[in-house]
Length: 86
Image (cartoon, rainbow, N blue to C red; front, side):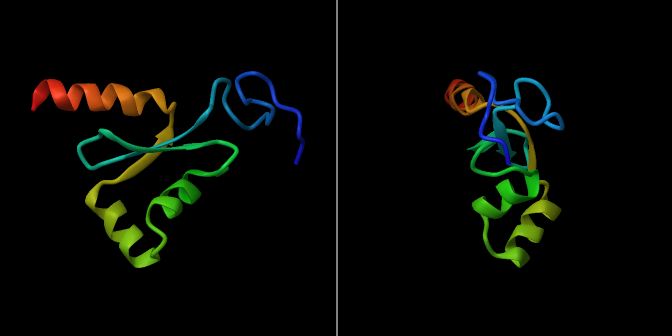
């Protein structure tokens, strides 16, 4: 693994430019958790950090939980939206 990273953490050619981490979304599509790209390298690993038990993790996935590329900023934006619609 190379220790050189660009400002946007995109040193890995397989990683999209600007890919800073993983956003875990609840079944409604709202951001629930975020993990830095240097903490976990794959979407499945991000989900495993959220729920370590493989059976429960599969139940969450079946219920609609998902992981996608994103920024931690989305958590703050999601919290603002939740307050505005509450």
